[in-house]
Length: 75
Image: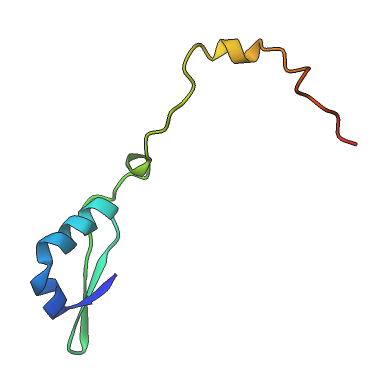
């Protein structure tokens, strides 16, 4: 994301929190110069995953299921 120095001054805490949460650098334009704000530690991709409902029960039960009624040969 790119912002001006005025926007940075106005929303500095929100923008810094966003950089820390997403791991994406913030580019600040000031006159003819550009400054980048980057987090010191990159954010783990796994930490961004949303929790999902998964399989409840024993995974071994799936291995031994009879799927022959559901299976149809490709023609």
